[in-house]
Amino acid sequence: MKLPEDFEAFHSRIVLGNTQVARIESAADSLVAFLSGAMNLSSGQIFLQGSFPNGTAIKPDPEREGGEYDIDLVVVCATEQDSPTDALDRMEAVLASNGTYAPMIERDPDRPCIRLNYADEQIGGFHVDVVPARPAAGEAPLEIPIPGHGWRETAPLEYTEWCHEQGVEFARTVKMLKRWRDHNQAARQAIKSIVLQVLTASCLPGYDNDAERITGTFLGLASMLADHPDEPPRVSNPVLPSEILSDRWDSASYQDFRRVVDAAAYKAQEALTDTDLSRSRELWRELFGKDFPGPQRGEGPLAPPPPPTRRRQAPQEAPRVEWG
Image (cartoon, rainbow, N blue to C red; front, side, top):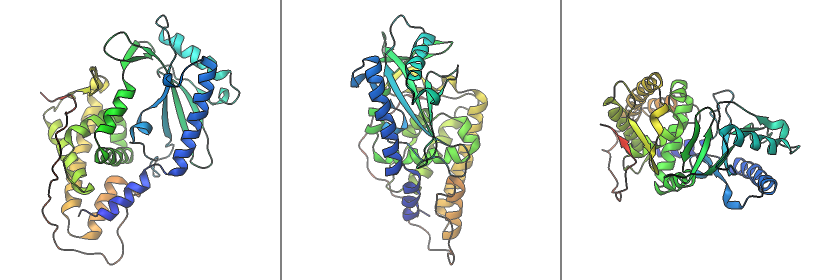
């Protein structure tokens, strides 16, 4: 069943509320102000990237321990002569010079950032990953340090703009699929958010309601990935074709993702076509977790739903996903 009111309630429970947004913006504003002064940077040289500015951020899954809000801050401060280690060392030293940020620092030798861990009584734990960057000489506007591998080209502002251009229903669908991924441990470990988003854009059907759109997206993903039974397809960044997002997607994780997508497509179809209200809610809840409204007393079979209707959409440029 389509259950539009249930999907609306589900969406409202997983998106960031005013409290979360205000706390995250406050932390980011304070950090930007400090770094701007300490490193003599203009406002255009420090900006947020990732799910928060892209409009696809969600709350941590309440059924998973250790979930945190993840915020990324890009700081264009590195020089042409810097190695990745130089850039990260300098960023760490600047943050360590501040009495507030010094005890919050966490550094992982494999990460292209310096992480600041926040503990907050209102919204729980969250962290800000501070990524040093520098202007790129090639196709991309920027490049970021990858310890042990040099510098990697990136286009975070352009990707944020692309996400906004995909429309409200894309963002809504991505948020629901991210909650499905986080609720399903195998999916959580199997695919990165940016790859999931680009694949979602390539499979998003033109339905007005969430239930049919989610089901159609799962079916589209399952069908596309079936054409690549052994290794992942070549998935390019839609705003930076030279960046192959799938080049670090190992075969084992890809096979895990194929399996959970197939299972999700089957369950979503069941939930959509089941005429028993209680059973339909139960199936959707199995997919998304307890933030989706559960069955209620007195529910039973209803009349079969009408056939799905597609909404006409203006053609959009498809992301670069090579399925051949």
